[in-house]
Structures are given as structure tokens and as C-alpha cells.
Image 1 (spheres, rainbow, N blue to C red):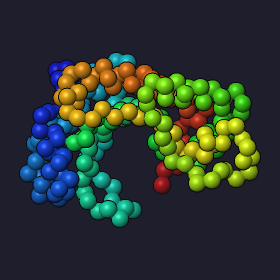
Image 2 (cartoon, one colour):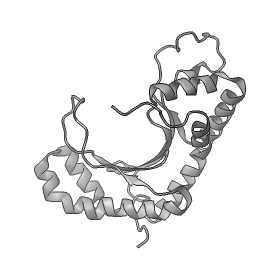
Image 3 (cartoon, rainbow, N blue to C red):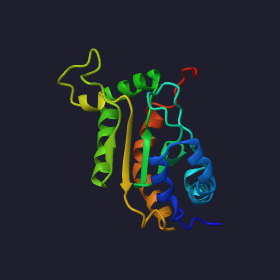
Length: 211
């Protein structure tokens, strides 16, 4: 079946999970998650697959091994299609795309490309167009500048990035519960595509082994 919107109980489910992030709550409400959250997310990805490719829904469990926050469950449902991302939660929908994390070898290739006039200015123009469309540029930034970079470099701000993505939030329930969300996600992803294309061409996947 096609995407008809997320379930009406999604907000209550995640509001409750934020108040009681425990295994008993999760167990008692597991059916709500499966029917009102996960199944609609799978349907949304299926609608988007012909244009963007197959997607993956992230597990609802948090990785708490290295985090001081030991709450076991995520308070949103996220999914990815390559460099694209969509997330549903009590605060509405977030749509994003780019490289949320870059390994060391990716950062090195990114800085080489940004430092070069032609490729660096190409990225700036693409980001300017994405910003003009109403999306927000974000990413992890160095506090100062990369070692050896001239403080007067014309693209110093871009060189400070250790990750780079653009995002847009659709607050409230109206769009989240509507089949119109498919068009909103697709349109936003199309806007972000020039950034993803640049990162794919000039950075690419990490070649470092997984830890």
C-alpha cells in the first residue's frame, strides 16, 4: 500500500517515550511503534525508492556504549537513502542530506577539494542555492582553522567543516500525518542533491577499516 501518512498515535508514543524511556514502556507500546511509526516509514521509503533508491530504517535502540546518556531508545524514527535522511518524531519531520559524519580520510579529501579554487567555489555556489531555498547548512566545525591554512583563506569557513549537510524541519502534525509528505521529502531531497553530488564526486566513502 502507498504512504498515507504516519499514524495519529506517533506523537503520543514519542511523548510517552521521552517521559519514560524504559523497556517496560517500550514493551507495552511496541505494537504502536510497529503500526504507527515503522510501517508508515517503510511505506514512505517505498514511494521514494523509484527516484532515490532503496532506503534503510535505523534501529530504534540507542548505542549507549560510549555515551553518558544511557536511555535505551531513540525518541524519533530515522531513515536513510544514501546521503539523504528523513526523521519523524513528536516535534514533526526533519528532512536532511549530506555527510553527517566524515572519517579522517574523507576530511582530508574534502579539504583538498575546498582549497582548490574551482571545486571550492562550486561548493559555495551550491550551498548558497540550497540556503536560498530555505534550508539550513550545518555540520561539525573546528573551533579555529585547520593546521597550515591561511587565516585569510577565502573559503576558511568551509574548510573548518568536519561534516557537512543541509536540513529542513516541518514542525507539527499536519504534514506528518498526510500523504503529501512524500512530495515534501522528494522536493527537499532534490534541492539537496547538488550538495550530495559534490560530496560524492570529491570526497566519496571512507577507505578506513571499521573499528
